[in-house]
Length: 329
Image (cartoon, rainbow, N blue to C red; front, top):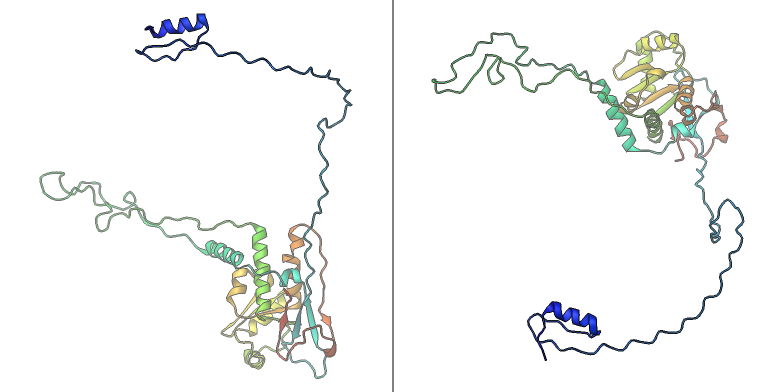
């Protein structure tokens, strides 16, 4: 047994090939080095041969994957919307029942309340004037003299008489003229119009008349005819010429009746009025204007006139005596 320092023991281990357990400040015993294991016999590697590579577009070879069947969603065809045509002028007895065939892409769209909400908010934002205006302390008339000294009075510090803290002074952070209008994509607005029209069809709130050519000029006669039809408060949407619009507007000065042109019809007006009365020309204009293909710059063909069908050949479902609109959604 002998005492070695750490450096001396490390050097002796390197010279004699012994393995030591070094502990600082302790006695160290030299141990013989463990015998080395015999190296395992290695098998010679076979000579590698390099095969010629053909020049192809894709040098990496991939395993063929099984073909996948891709299923494409095909929209189901929608059936047309049928609305029985009413008559503002009493028709002669024995006349045929006429049915207006409406485009399902415009009058049978899926109902989306979120789109309607966005369109109504967009419309109401555009109707705000935004003209509220208050004067700041720089705009209020008056002198810039300091009201009282800064110190010595025991009261609060004040500047001029236009201070917002004083009566008759300016307004701090008051309303100023601004634009409240918001932006909404045009396709969303077009979709909202189709949803509004489709919701009215579902609620049976759309009435189709052949024309608005009222022969009389008396408002009393026109009121009596409306009471006989039991339409109540309704909006007349005229799609024909200017003369027809002026004639029907002249005799319809009645409470609960409003006459507008089809070009002025908007989504908020459709939802606000409980009943809409449209002529055939107004329906044609709405189909041409708000059809989805017209917003994608594709020419579309529409039915120009309502289909005339006899009573026993009406499309299903059968119509009751009142005006009923049926849409298959």
